[in-house]
Each structure stands twice: as structure tokens, then as C-alpha cells.
Length: 475
Image (tube, rainbow, N blue to C red):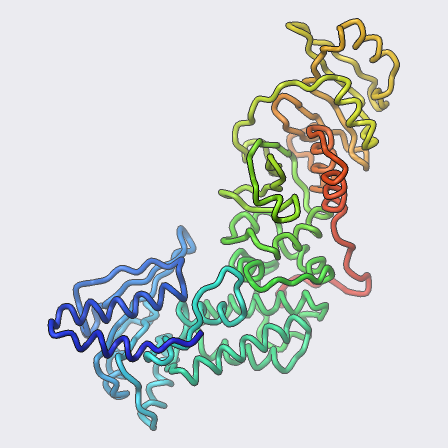
């Protein structure tokens, strides 16, 4: 939605108190920037229209990914004076200069544009600021482009330049998604010209992922190919936060370019696109341990019963009343909860219902532990267990069992901590087998829940065998 910033700035400048006028102008600029990029933090200085001291500091990200942009407000709209200011400002700070009025057209403006592009500086007039669409939970291509301008735009941009950029990116992203060369090339040209190298690489990586997801070879990608061997967290964040892509084949091609470590570092990963990615990932990605945690999650009902999410650096499958966390190591998970041991009859019923072989069962009766096993053989239906259960008054609780997945991978399942993992600290098993086996043993699933779980762990159909996976962005 285009908003008119110029009248707000004019109204702020009309305040009779000069100090109040300055603060009100800063209010207008800060508010609009945060509407576009709400994850950013903006701090004001006590200066205004200073030669080299910024009026505002904008920062975003954290740790190694923390970045900043210094913002300078200018009362003059003279392109020659603005060019002098740009020359004074340090290129490393990627200055964002906001003149408080419209920059007149002409040769001087053209020279300012060239200078700003060379200095990775953005001169964004009020009409351009107002043309940038606000942030949305579902990130359209225009919203992604808008954020790219705020973080790394360069040159001189008013409303016409902003609208041209947004349209080119919107058309280009859709073109890349469909494997069409011309709109993809036009968008990449705009990105290279209008954004600094870091932002340009990020957006190009995102579009290259779209291109590969379409089934096209990177050898045909109509632009510079970044040097990443796979999608990094920034590109993956853009992809997951973009408008929903329901194409199964697309995500089957994207999945080999991502791993769980990258996913856990992404921001805002809890999206519809994450669900599509994970439908492919459950067949390909591997983990060592699964842990169930009790949690009331009413949203799971609204989302169809099961929903993937990244929560505080952990990947979990949310369902009605539980979250199943997956990790490469037990140390990556929190301390498990304590649960009562289910009765032997219940465990045998669950295993029999879903044809899960149990080769070992350890039971607890008051203060006595009883083990029953036959290495490599399924003991679930052994009549001797009936005798043991009858002798113990059918009150024995199962504390642990060794279960076999559909591909005969053994899982040590602790019913009292609701954790499961294959023997050996480095042994791994696919998400689908790990989840499917443990959830069916640990939970009393009704027919609807069992059907949903079966659909989830089965995952997506693999991509067409006619498509060849290249190393992403290898040159």
C-alpha cells in the first residue's frame, strides 16, 4: 500500500518549536522504516542535518549476522549539495540519506544517482519511502524487495524507481519459480544495480533457489551464480517466509540444498512453506533422538492436527497436547519430562496395531525390574508374556522397549522419559521412521490422528528422475 510521507513531513516541519519539528520529522521517518522492517531497531541521535553525524541508527540481526545502516536527514533537495554529502559519508556504513522533499530531475540528479550507486549509498526521497509496502507475515515478493531496499538499497530512488524495482522483483521471482529466463534476468539486473553486493548476493541466491526448484539447471541461470554449496539461512528464511508454494516437486528439489542446522538458524521459519519443505525432509533428513514433551497447543487443531515449527533453536512437530522434538544429539534437547509407565497390555496393543516389532521389553513392578527379550525376533505376541502379565496381576508398567522401524533400525524407547534413539551415539535414522515408530508407541492415537501421522511420515513423492541435482552455486 502506497502512503504519502511528504505531507506528514511538511506537517511536522510546520511546528512552531524547531526542536519539536525535528523530533516529529524523526518520528515520521522512524515509523515508516519500522513498518517496512519491524525486526529492525532504530536509535536516534541528538543531531539533525549534520554533515557526517547520523540522525538515526538502524540495526537488525544479531551475533555474526548483525548489521547496521546510518540514516541522515537532509533539509536540502539540491542534487549537487546531496552529492557533496554522499562524498563525505563513509561507504562502509552504507548511508541512507532521506531528503525532506522531492529531488528535481535533471543532469545533476543523474550524476547523484551514479555517485550514490558507487558509494553504496541510498538517497530515498519521501515519495520513495511512501511507496515501499509494509511488512507482512506472508512475505510477498514486493515485501522482500522493500526490505532489501531498506537494508541495502543504493542510488537515488523516488516513487517511480521504487515501483519499477518492486514490479521487476515481483515478476522476476515468479519467473524464476517457473524457470522463465527473461523476467528472471530483468530482476537480477535491477537487483545488481539497485542494491549493494551483500544484499544483491542474498536476493540472487533466493532467486537461484527458486530457479532450481522449477527444475531448471543452474547452468542456465541468467545471472551471476553465488558461491554457496547450499542455501544459507538468509536465503532459506526468504524462501520460507515468501508466499506459499504448494508444488510438491519444487520442495523435493529444494530439500537436498538444505540441512537441519541451516533450518535451525533461520528466522520466522514457522510458515506454510516449512510444512511443505518438511514433507520432503522426513524422507531424507536424519536425527538421532526424538523426545515428546506435553504441551497444550490449540493451534494444532486449527492447522490440521500436526504442524512443524522451529522453537528456540529446536525443530519440533506440534500436535494436540504434545511436541515431538528431533535432534542430532541428546545434548541438543532439554531435560526430559517424567511420565508414568504404560501397562504392558497397552504397549503390546499399540505395537500390534501398527505392526511394530518389539525385540526387548523391560517392565517394572513395584520395586522389581523384569526383562524379556529375544534378540532380532519380535516378542510382542509371545504367549509367555501373557503368563508374565497374569502372574503380576496385569499391573506391570513398561519402562523401556527395543523397537524396530520399518527398515529394521532398532530404537531404544524409554516410556518414562518419552525419548527414543538408535543404539550408538552417532547412529541416525530418518525423521519419518523415528517419528512414526515413537509416536505410535508412546501415544494412544485415534484413527484420525493415526491417519494424519501416516500421511506426514510418508512424506512427499520424490522428484522426477529426469531432473539432475547440481551442486548449488558451484562455479
